Length: 104
Image (cartoon, rainbow, N blue to C red; front, side):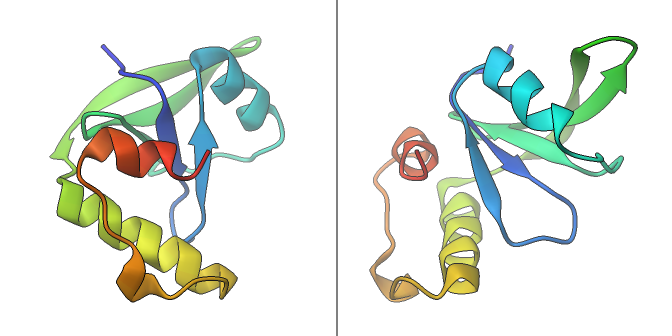
């Protein structure tokens, strides 16, 4: 079961997108062409592939991969570096949930 909020991680892109809920995910996915390796990372580090189906639904397929706080912090550092707006060395978080929420 997904623990919201989540981060949307698009394959081959350092940008991360904050996703507050399943409804927000549906809204975001309407504007995207999804790759088979795009995923969301939830607030406890679980990851899910995004599978589109007919209509306005996105199925979440659990991955075996679990993201640690260190890995999520690294992804957020890369995200911020790509925007060139913040010193990435200052980016640290006490929990996965606080890391995910930082992009809100």
